[in-house]
Image 1 (spheres, rainbow, N blue to C red):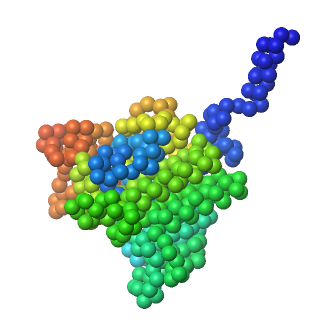
Image 2 (cartoon, helix red, strand yellow):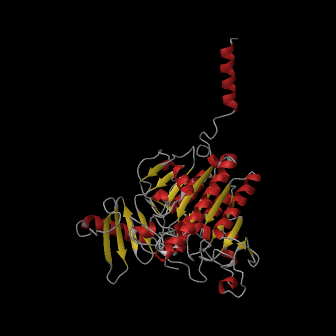
Length: 448
């Protein structure tokens, strides 16, 4: 037999034995545990829309987060479901508008994410993932509400909405005595007296250890890395803040240092995935929990408003989805997406059944970001705390919680800064959006 025919036969046999690495891997057959992607969700806190260089910042340089953006899809109209931490997390964790179970505001003492709700930790654990939560919880303090009871195999972090970036070494310090501010490992409260850390770096150490332990166990992992950064208190390492000492605003100097630590953390996570050969097998998502905080001097340009407000500056956030080899790299996605979409995206890749997905308000983003589905993932998006809002296409209506009610209408394609209320010029559009908002509100529960 001629040599060239032997060569063709050998190549054909090898191709059958060793398929192309990654071809139609997780999407084609997500039921096979060995082929499902790892999932790393990086959830930052209170960061400004324009405080990362991939978002156009001229003051802060974030090369590692920029690197992640270059390896994935930047969702230019990426939203969260609330303008403050608690309800935003409730929507993220459940994949449902949190108003459906009465979670409109930050939780008061004794309030928590209802036990009737399924978290993405619950769902992915049931699919064979090793699930971890590192950092901030803010979803309930009593034992039955803590992460290990809400679907997470591993927890290292704190229960409150914020804490110091440094150890509580003084036993008489009020927050040092409060267990919700203290570090925990699973259900064990840690003594910080002899510890030395900066939380952003400490949590990154724990994140890498969790991923490495999961790899050693041969188990796909889902890690919810819920950063404290860059939420207050404004505490930065001197070396991180040093490049920003020329800024006039003292808060901007500290925020620059806190952002530098967040960028370093992201780089360390990506380096570990590259070095272990897991980058192509790992979906990495980077999202902020709400709009940048005015109190930390965050920069939300060109958006109007800040954390706590239903203008774009309170609800539109930096939003990256990255999976090299499976999703486009260095791409931009223009249609509106929301943090509620992450649960169904993760669950679909883990092999979720249709009935599991139907109860969620979000949608699987993968086919949209991959270009397999055209058009917008959502017909309409909704928000409500005190004020309420709805977006349909380029149009956004805000209902102000004032005596008698007041409405604002903006065309975001022409006026992303929401400077010109055009409700008088477009009464028919305003009435349509009012009706949609009212119908959605009628589906929601009483406030907690």
